[in-house]
Amino acid sequence: MSKIQVAIIGAGPSGLLLSQLLHTRGIQSIVLERHTREYVEARIRAGLLEWGTVDLLNQAGVGARMMREGLAHDGVELAFDCSAHRIDLKALTGQRVMVYGQTELQKDLADARTGSGGCIVWEAKDVAIDDFAGRTARVSYTQRGERLDVNCDFIAGCDGYHGVTRASVPQHAITLHERVYPFGWLGILADVPPVAAELVYTNHARGFSLCSMRSRTRSRYYLQCPLDDDIDSWPDERFWDELRLRLPEKYGSRLITGPSIEKSIAPLRSFVAEPMRFGRLFLVGDAAHIVPPTGAKGLNLAVADVRVLFEAMVDYYRSGSDTLLDEYSSRALARVWNATRFSWWFTTLMHRFSDETIARKMQLAELRYIGESPAAAAAFAENYVGLRFR
Ligand code: APR
Ligand code: PHB
Image (cartoon, rainbow, N blue to C red; front, side, top):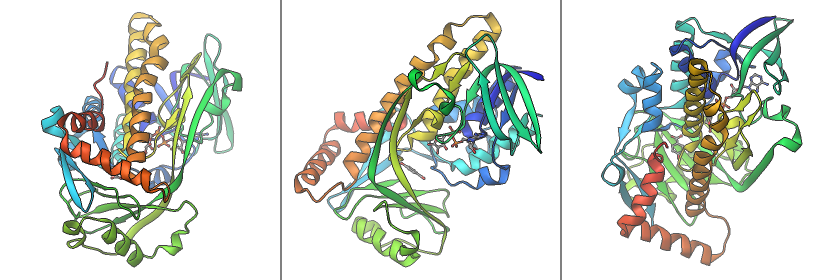
């Protein structure tokens, strides 16, 4: 049986970033990932980073390509009533956001870990966390048919919503909070120039739309759609026609279309598991919480968890103190609940939930209020760029 300081389950952004940060302080970890590297890197996810996320990626030494290729945005547009209203994030908060696809970040993280001799086991099957309540913890997995055990000080459950770590916690010890939304997001990626220089979130009577991007030549667009829609019922032409209908005229008229290179429908959910620590097991990122994508908080929250856990582990290995480890769950959850509230609120503000005219009238009243009141715009901007770390 081998021994390592930290066993990390899952090689998504949470697991790889934690491993990389620990490496910068000489703390050793093993990362166990169920899938192949190719599979993990092919997943298309959101692409908007808070500046706190950018800073931590730079601190971890994985930010060079992001700083070169990412697009820093000073503002964002909210469209309704047939026109777009710009929220000047920089003027309202002093902060910007960075557009950089998670797919690229995932590659940068894996390159950095591999380049510095990090131990990532791809295709680790049947990962089991057998023991995490005592003085040490144990993880076992199968690699090329061989069953292996690892003893460790801590387990980081970075294995996403469908992972094994949260599921291993006894039911009586964990509380799950969940809301499922009655629609999905149909997303496409296409090699066409983005319709606007900044992101455009639109509330339209036909449903929500979002114009985002990956670069100056690659666009990422989304439409609210019924959850049970079949992807085959959305040929590219139908997608472009519907997007055009939902955009303010100044954008609809200049939308450049082209063949999609990816197209998928994703459900929307708010989910939080409490607490986020169970003895030697720490839940991180999607393993502990999911937000709907309106506002792109998912990856940023995962990175914020990693920051808190990393600081606690560094403190433990430097001074032997458990204090920050003991505070992990409450510190992480404070930010999680803020982002859960904001993502729910922004989703509720922008989507069509029913035919009720009163619901839509109230959405429009609130959007006009954000457009007219600097205080309301500032409250939106402060959450959108990410609340300050405490
Ligand atoms: N054993 C090993 N690995 C597992 C297991 C398991 N039983 N179950 C899941 N995994 C792996 C998945 O294959 C995946 O690569 O854990 C990884 C989890 O990665 P993500 O789902 O990307 O979660 P996380 O790293 O927390 O990333 C933060 O926030 O909202 C999102 O889009 C955002 O994916 C991003 C996430
Ligand atoms: C994306 O670019 O995929 C994206 C951007 C902002 C969001 C959601 C998704 O709120």
